[in-house]
Image (cartoon, rainbow over all chains, first blue to last red; front, side):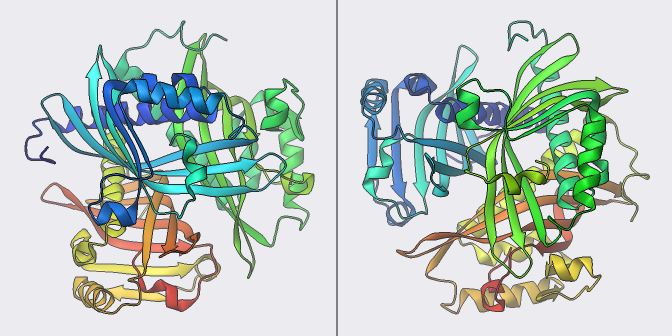
Length: 168
Length: 168
Length: 168
């Protein structure tokens, strides 16, 4: 998808689109921050791709990443598995999204980026910067509502695989 | 207050409302970051409630919290007390607000949330993540200007009571 | 420049202006985050002033700061020098901008502020809060596009001079 050239929108339409994407991020993050993991897959299309990749691998063109899910069913399985282990239980998370950019829109798809910050607090423990990175998103609109057809979370932070179970 | 159902607004009005709330946050945070504590109570209604509560207590339905102020007079006393001790003097603060969400609007009240990040720098010391949490706000409009009728700061970070003197 | 009084704009125009400034920040930060240092000077006017100053010095009215560049040529030299040493190479950066405020607009200039957060990740190292501060900006519009005529980065964090080579 071309980033920009094919975008035939007025400045006003572009502002509205960015505002809609910001609303999506806020709702998505609140869902995760409040622990409603079962609603996580609802933010994706049926055939969505979800990836978490280090910047190093991303820059090297390695697509796979540490987390890879294809299709809403895989996301549902993942959400269910996380929700039914106690692995993530003794922590709370807070997401912060900034610098939302619309890169292009074509054929009903919107390519956008945003920087995210994920803080984690262990119960009676310190709050730490858990993951910092950039969302590489492709949105589509279904019944007026934005959904992720693709989300690649490209993180700068050096994570251990264990910590990646929780959605970004 | 119902979150959503009673909100009869167009998409455009909702975008404008969110923008107004973002402007409120930016002005409020700048006031605190620049040390104008005497102006802090002016951002609240006369009968406002201000609370700072841990997520743990909030989730358990315990309303009180570590900081509780009812009415602008209490906020003024508090601001005066802080401004006249040296407790907070040798530090600077920076607030960051993200993920602003309008949850509902009814009878002139607007229920909204936002994630906040409060950094603190001790003079010649390190900058640390002082408090991270979620604003649970109720706004009203007075003479065209948004004011807080209720602000509950629900924080994830494990704070000691001492650190809570400074407004969030 | 007067901050506010001389601003003759409707609420809608002000919202659009803030949205444009937010878009500027997002593009500027992405450029730095993605390492396109050669494009850095293009975000400034020919006669722009760029400064990085500690809050302590700023509050004391000391204008100079640790970094000072006057004119796009100096910025180009600086970008070239950084791009051709390996000083910054083994790190990645992420910028987060929040709390964008338009303080005034007069004679084609827009005075604005925003809080920024700069994270740095050393290769195979930890992600740290590298610099936190407030942009004090003066924008002008050239051919429909916002450019910085002045950017003063007032930081709270205690930095060593070495770390300041990379643009904020």
